[in-house]
Image (cartoon, rainbow, N blue to C red; front, top):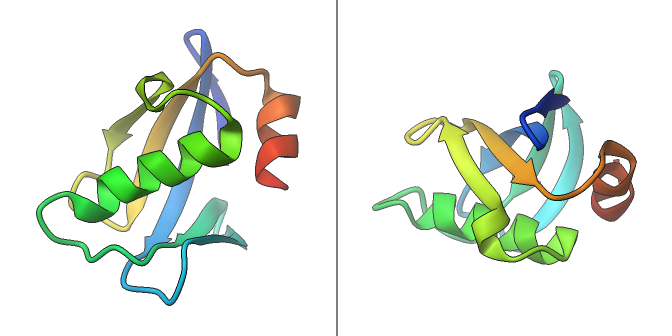
Length: 93
């Protein structure tokens, strides 16, 4: 779910688009399952995911980068600027 990478961590997620609300569901096959209201079209779900995580982590949006899974539900996000324990605490994982 969380792997050290450069100056931060890679968070591996499984996204469920077109949900009733934006929320962290919990672990899902070694990834963090997150539901989003945004549809999976024209990058809307990707941007919604990054904004949602930035808010949960208390980081500026520019500190999060989608590094894989542009058109997939399986995504990897690089989080810069927080330690592993702090990321886990803020996301409740």
